[in-house]
Image 1 (cartoon, rainbow, N blue to C red):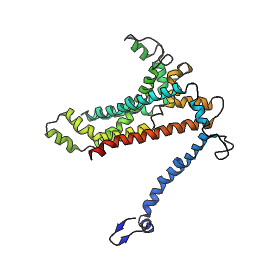
Image 2: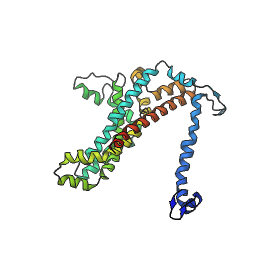
Image 3: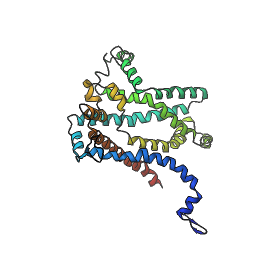
Image 4: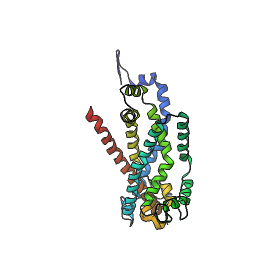
Length: 308
């Protein structure tokens, strides 16, 4: 309710006055209710021995048995380590790459070259994961182009995907950067172009060069967008590219390439369909993501609150 000079407006009067707005709002609200909130009932599957024929409300309740089975797996700690390391790499190198790329393109004065650069770096975003992993397999095999190039610097000639060790973590991160950095850079470019030109003119009058304008105007103006996207990225940090990992890894490299999603995939849908186990793994990742978002939000909001 809102107060006016003549008194209070009831919700019926408010609806009558702005009913068109509420009708428009009903469209996205219906989408979120049907496709986002209603499916949340599937969380119950994580605590059941779920059977498709019995449904959610007819399946046997098992409590935390699915979580116990997930945590007691012989390779769970190794999988958790791989997932955490690749998530950390995605959250640092993978996140900073599009930011740096967007800033570099924004500094290009030649408009034609800038547009061409944006188009070229954006193209990999439309390449499917199957094609990306196939190219990686060709380039990183014994006689691949990347392997031969590395051999010039004294590296061993080998299949970097079959005998990778910890290098798989960086291969997965690099493929993610190559495929998604262009898309992320476009977002940061839009944010940079939204910064008032008056600020750059004022900085130029004060004698600031391009580097000083970058550090004093561009970066502070870009920081709110970076902070918001970083917080959102923290929520999905444990989703470290299930499709690419599944296409690249093999049993001989599970020690360094197996992640929580692929590990759950094999446990839940290997010999039998264990939907409860897969739901438990998904719920675990969602809880971790929610905690990271809350922590990240607190951390990023702490400085502005202190400055006020």
